[in-house]
Image 1 (spheres, rainbow, N blue to C red):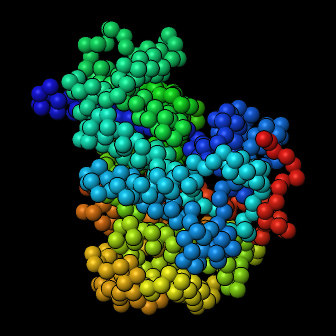
Image 2: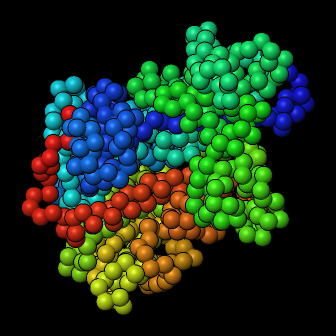
Image 3: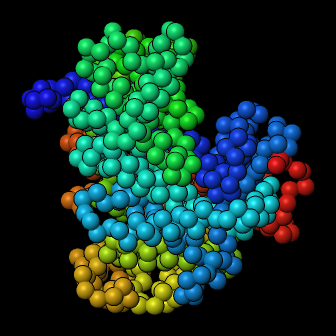
Length: 636
């Protein structure tokens, strides 16, 4: 195909894939414990279901259900497991330099998370072998245990209640799995379609976008490098063809469309999707669903028609029908404030994306949303989405954050939570420094307290503040930890805003490590910077939050090597994805924001459940032992 013809075809229609891990958090536990995928399973944080797999959904179980309700709905058939909890006791064990300490899993997963944020496998260099080997070893230590060990873990963990006072819920186990899965995907793409023939964007912990336009529009290249005949047969026979009037599962190799280059390219995209999904399942037993279409929005919507463990293709001719059937809240970036504003402009019985296209003009949308946001909504309602797939490799998170919500707590009662959060941050910073050659200059302390104005310490009385301190640079990890704990406690004592209901720490303001010298030397080196005077001492600046509800840590934005962020937003804002597109659109900067927002969504989700758990357990749990079996059997 000539270069000019190829460029024209790329402009006319891209081939975009959305790959989505099925019920990811619950599936991680299924794999870790060696369970069959047909076993109904829920993953809890405290007494609230965080993830529900498809077999459990068949009982009517949904996110937010408590362990008793799960047991009732499933008649004891559903297994309830709890997120890993980092306790103060675990942190005490791990404060030494013992590599076999209770912090080992958290450390390995944090390192894997950093690798995943950079693209899992560095496809531009040949010196990443050790990192890949470390990732495989870390993954195997958690997810490939002998069956007798898995069985013992299952018996010890099934239907066990955990309580907020025990410690901090952790997602590191799932980030580790995510990093390993994304490395398998990258390896499969490199081996089967080639290094320069795809763009991979890590959209979240369990989703990726792939742009395979050039590859799919070049008939001289095989659609997939290995087992092509088998993949072609299964991809064509078992891909859901959205809009088909004949079958839900239909052949997509109809002869009448063979003359349509776009249709041929989409069919090749289906083969790529099938190849990636098979590679992950063969290597790790994880299942994915996929959507194949001409842009990000439609590909993501299409994936839902292939779930679970399947794939769906949406041809351009079917996009209007898809928009007419899709609720506004189901579309990327339309589930929050923007979606509510748009719905307010239409009759109550109109809630589909197609309704926007039929009922609202661009001037009407602009008056309500502003020009840039209105144009985006106007286009998406018609299935138009020109947002590029942006390469993940090279983007680093701009903060390392940990938080904990609890009942009304005064200074003396904060000791264990300060120790837990500081220990988590120090361990993860050290791993990040080894991996990425950088160190944080500052630590942001976020805290939520009550001013007592409402008379009872209710949510309406709560105020959020933040303060910035210098991040310790002592050469010894224990000294860094002790210094950070002491500085946080000193800062909170000076503020004297008690009781506190929530505490978070964020390592921020990263600077490059010198290329010479050991990691300990780097930590002990006092590096001057334009902000040294502001950061070396605990010169804290309050940042008043107009919201009365507790806020998650500030947006942990990410940046590429050639871009730095000029502003930040709250975690809630980023999770809602309601930002207007800036008039000077910077794709790399926009990608960086979205990458970190995916991490923040996970933490914000945990934070929300963490706070809501107080309705079940009060400020210190239910009393008695923090680790005990529910009296009501709930499965397995």
